[in-house]
Length: 445
Image 1 (tube, one colour):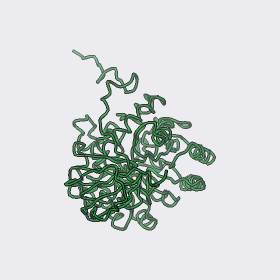
Image 2 (cartoon, helix red, strand yellow; image 1 turned 90 degrees about the horizontal axis):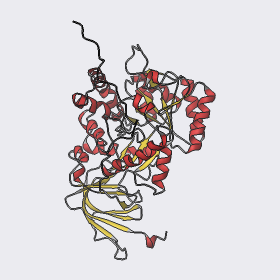
Image 3 (cartoon, helix red, strand yellow; image 1 turned 30 degrees about the vertical axis):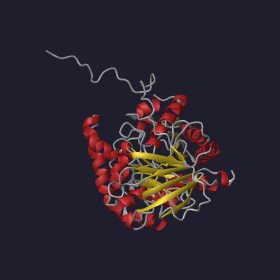
Image 4 (tube, rainbow, N blue to C red; image 1 turned 135 degrees about the vertical axis):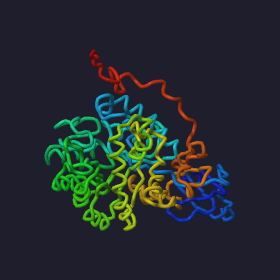
């Protein structure tokens, strides 16, 4: 396109949070095509030769980069159990449903997200459909099926000893590791995800048990890196974090129960971590309303409490903390809780609101593999913005108020914020159905 023909959009008189962690300032933003052309303290310096197609007066409103959710499961459709996720989803229907859920995510102010593991190949196909303009949705970076050993991930015995189930692909040896990674890269993934740790019956260790050897992790990382694709690991134990870092992993999800040895390696490598406490925080806060078990509530409360100190140390030493919501489960439905991780970062980890916003914008852009062009309000960056009637620099919780969101701009274009009609019902067989809520034992006289 000839630059003279590019559409221009001017956002005037805004309080600008640029995503860098710097203090907000009053100014205006000029967008040409899909990029930010300039960020101005006023509009007087605008060239009279520039034709502005549309102007938005953002007086008494705040403009910030679109949020980036570094941990979202768009293909899951809010299951309440692994049984539901693994045995009640159909591939074609999952893709259609995911498309409608992606719009919910976008209309909440999330203009980009990473979906590191998908059921079937839904993630890749949905990303490609959105990029082609077939359906509306946020920018997506995607993985394929998470690589697991037969020990399993967080689904334990539901994981088969070989083959695929749900979001997982079980690999049993070096050849299968290499073959599956190459298959996914041929498909077009942006990331390879490995479930490095998992749950097993009768385990005594805190968190989860490491399910991969260091040698296996190195094979996986080397294979992906040779083809230019980064690797992200699900890690909830000290040895899983340490071995993932030693193997060359590019990002760590959770990183809980990390020890001082792992922290030292992490600080040296500055590998970003995505704590993803939103799921735990929601289950703790709403356990009674959701009918969640008391055991889960206690386990998740302990996971947060036990890991605050080590994560604070990592952050103070310059390790990037990225915001991820784990949206896609019944505990974290789409479009509702993407802001929550910022709130947790402020209330639990002690970050300032501006630091938390940076974790959800500039720093989180690495999860999209666009850290030089996304997540900042700056010249030549992609024009993904949110205009909100509130001040997130003082209170990040306003980002969860959809009624305060005035405009969302994705790739330089205004997003239609008209909500889609609610789903009439779930498709047949989509949810777990029970014969009864309790066992019908015969009462004795």
